[in-house]
Image (cartoon, rainbow, N blue to C red; front, side, top):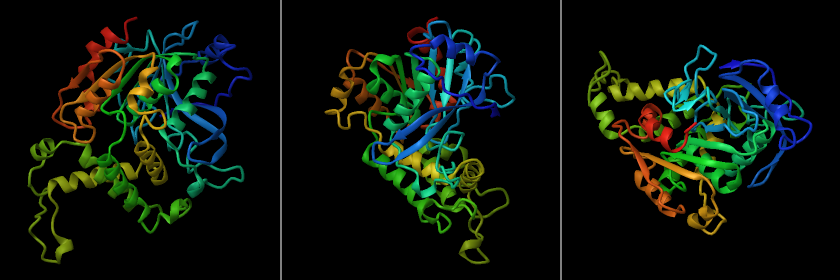
Length: 391
C-alpha cells in the first residue's frame, strides 16, 4: 500500500462542516493511498480504554457536495484497506467490484475502506506504542464488532459523512456491515452483507478458538508481549492452516490436490523416521498459505480480530436478531456462497427471514468454498448495479 501523511481530525464536528473536510480530502488524488485519522479516546464494550486511537483508511473517488455518495467497504479477518488498485501499483483484493466502470464505480461513488481497530495495517493495534512508547501487547483491550463500528462512525464523522450510501462487507466485513445497520440505522441507506449470518455459531466459535489457542500456546507468544523478540510464527502459521481449511471446500481441495505427493516428495518415504516423510500436495499448499500470512500479519492482531468475530451477534443484548433489526432503515442486500462450509448459506437465509420485509438471498456459484466471496464477487455485479449502486 502507498502511504501518505496523517490527516488531522477537523476541529469542529463534520456534521457541522462536511464541505470543509471533503475539500481537504480532495487536495490531491488519494485513490488507494493509505491515510490516517485520529478519533480520540475509545472505550471498549468488555472493558478497557485507549487514550488515543488512529484509524488507517484508503479512499477512491470524490466525495460529492452533500456527502451522499459515500460507500464504506469492510475487510475480512486478515484483509487490508487496499480494496482496489487506484493510483498505485498494487492490485486490490476486490478489484472486480470497485473501480472506474465497476459495480461500485469510483467515478460516481466515494469509497472508504478502514483497517479495523486492533489490526496491523495501520490502525491502532497491539503493536502500536502506548503513551510511554511501549507496544500495547497483552494490555490491548478485547475488541468486539460493535467496538469496531463505533470507531468507524467517528471516522465517518471526521470525513464529513453523515450517512453512507452503502456499507458493504464479506465474512467478518459482512458482520461489521450488518452491525452498522443495527447500531446506526439512520446512517445507512443500503447494507450489503455477504457470506455471513447474524451471529457466529458454536461451530464457528470452536473453529476460531482452535486458531487462537494455536497462537497462545506458541512458546514465543509470551502472553502477547513478544515485540522485540522472536515472534510466535509457528502458532500463527498453524492458525492460518486451520482457518484456510474452512475457507476452501472439500471438493476444491480434492480436485486440486487429491492424495498426490508434493513434487518429488513421497508421503510414504520415511526412511529417516516419521518426521522425515514427504508431504502431500495439500500439506505443501497449507504450508505456503501459512508462510504468506506469517510474513504479513501480526499474531496479536490475529487473536484480537478472531475473538472479535467470535463476538459477532447482532441480537446480543437487543432481544434477539429480529428485534435488533426491526428498527433497521437500510435496504439490505444479502448473498451467500453456495459451497461455503464456514458460514453456511442457511445462515444468510435465517438472517433474511429476521429482516423486515421480503429480502432475497443471492447466491454466488463457486466450487471453491467460503473464499468465493472474494474470488467470484463479480457474479453479484449486475444485481448490485440494479439494487444498490444505481447512480
